[in-house]
Length: 466
Image (tube, rainbow, N blue to C red; front, side):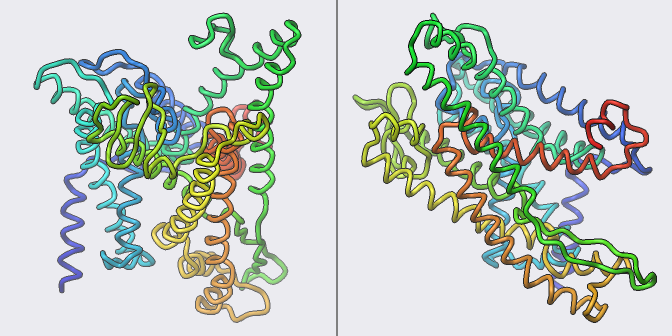
């Protein structure tokens, strides 16, 4: 009885939440591609629409936060995917620890999870809007009315992101969460590598590392040219490693029960939960960085709060959260011989935290997203297929899949966490985590597009994907 009341309450909440209706007919390839493009263009435009009442300032200290949440500080997209991801983290922790006893392996449990996930995300849009203003992340013009107006603009931007993500999920390809991160990192990568415009921190040099490299070569400054080359080199290395590991998988042979001699394979990727654990772990760390500014007071060295201290440029220099973030360029410091003991300890704690968080989130994601052994066995059974050499029933298939899926979730999550930390240590452009996420996102989108019916696609798109 209590379960039915909770279910009914979830359905009641769902009626009041803003939602995008699913298409009532099968979408063509071109139309889905169009909707994906429209949403990305809208997101980019909104990222350049400034919030009324916010002073112009440098947000360099929030660069990592911007990259992993696909946000743009000072614009309507300041919150980015932060509320969506934070809501997912909180709800997964509550469900995974059984504080909220929902069986997410069943459709009813997943429905409740999705409803409350969206409700919590919308609520967090308002809460984070207030926190951003109250913690001083944005410098707001004086006046209570302006402060309230800025907080409401931030919340509205967050809700728009939720709706844009839903449009992509239902009408386009991939997910908005992933694509928004990829767009942000991609633009950063393009600017840092190819931009010919002057770098504000070095008025005599361009922003693009390619141009810096050639200018240093012409000036016979080999060491400076080498330092420009290192970030590009490690970015390429991370790219190659991720693409290689994305293709590691276990192939489960299947046969049709009604047609002997015909079959296919069911692929279980090594990165079974894809980039989701990294997104959640990186967003958690980004939230830690934001929380470090709450209650901060001015000192002789900079700003200090209960959990973190910052220098005059807004960089973390000490505190608990200092040891949960990555060193700026561990490999570069190691090469130049400037690596210090605190940075070594910081690297070790960050590596441990990142790998453990990704592993835990990977396990939780399997149970809350319908990727567990039972659900996959149901999907295989519904296609009229079975695993050759075993009984063709759901329980047998589930027992076989149980040998692979939980270990893949565990090892895949651990490996992707270690890989993200390694990428961050290299000083790769757009942060190692950002590059890792972008490569995985682009690879997954490419695979998804390749599986579509390409008959209606533009010849250039078809040629690229085939």
